[in-house]
Length: 152
Image (cartoon, rainbow, N blue to C red):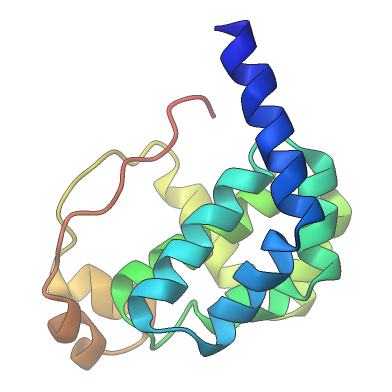
């Protein structure tokens, strides 16, 4: 298993060198709804265990782009953007402060409250609360969310 971890680390390094983080941050602002959702998931994954990745995401403008997606872009985009922000802030008070200054405090607080959320359905009311409106919740149809990372 250690070989797989080393391979993953090498692949992450290559992706960062190739500009993947900048590409993903750009996608948050200009991609389709699904593209934004998956870009947020990818950024969360890159930030999970690598502080250098967190710093690159911040430097690429990832905080503002993710905060912008925490309301009104559909519940799954908002939840995944909030998860990415939570992962960026985890263990880094400076990044948390920057997220709060950018207007992402409610997303951080909401994700902290959910804490150990596992795969479940999101009701229209929950989705509306997370995104600031029922129209976005109805557009997404309350589909299942990806499971939280159990290693937190």
